[in-house]
Image (cartoon, rainbow, N blue to C red; front, side, top):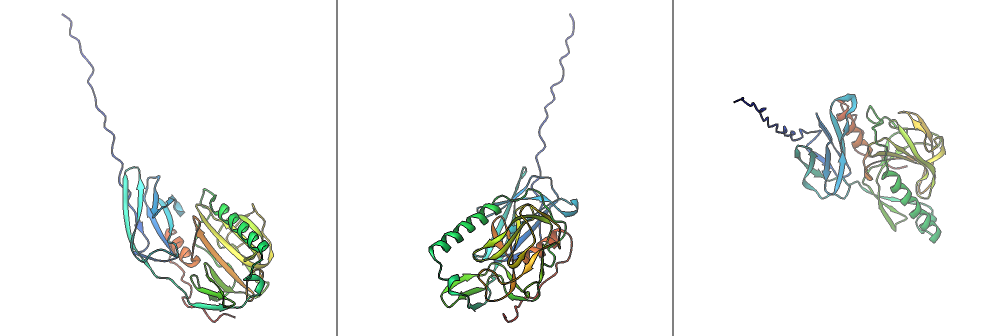
Length: 293
């Protein structure tokens, strides 16, 4: 009788993926702020705050993964958590939402900027839809390697989150920073990116949108002159135009805005989050605005 040898049966079990290891820049974030998160990888990872999801991207310097999670201005105060999901499961990152409301400011503008005609209302609605379409289709790759630089202008004259009462009747919450800038002051891209819009709009006057990739945008409004064109690649510090007093304004200045995944946030707090992701100490701007001119 001949012996028959059967090959051994080797059972290979998959190695379970690790639960994401995540570090946060801070244990709290104000309304209109950001929570900067880092992870050593591997990806893909995504962070979820409420109903919004934010994919991680390669961190500056090639050190792991990173994400900037926006905290909407109307977020409820108190304990919250960001859920980071990966192939190995989920990690919960607790933090607190703190208040970030500015003062109430009285602003006088031409009546035509508060008592809108039907044509002006339709124009403003079309432009708002255009803004939303642009921010909903950001560049996939991160274009910046360093935190936001100086966009031009001087002292802050109106804080992010301030309530503005135009002509005593129309009230709005300011979702950007106003910087003192005489007409003709050079306005510069705060970081590298691609110009997605450069034109005159009803409220913002001559306006430039820059796409910095991964959902991050900046805007520069009320310019007296546009030097940038849609589709143009710009470097950090490259001139986009000159400051002015176009649109709904009470005088010349630069309005500087930022948004992440369509959520408008304070540009200074984005800068601090970017500094953490770049391994740099954040450059803090003054907390109190000077008297508006």
